[in-house]
Length: 77
Image: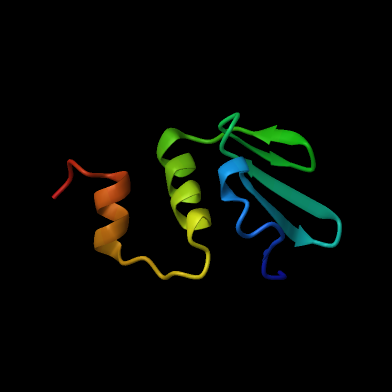
């Protein structure tokens, strides 16, 4: 499986556009709050959405387990 390519880095305020393969386009739209694959909305749970947004906001940064937990699951120990 090819590595997804971020196509519009630096345009995060509008969302992130990824090309997972030459024929597949994935849009993480922060304005509408949805993930679309080739134009079709993909249903996501709230925490899954939060995780995707967190990772897409800084695509070249490795987040620690502690950072992920603090951002997505702040009430867990």
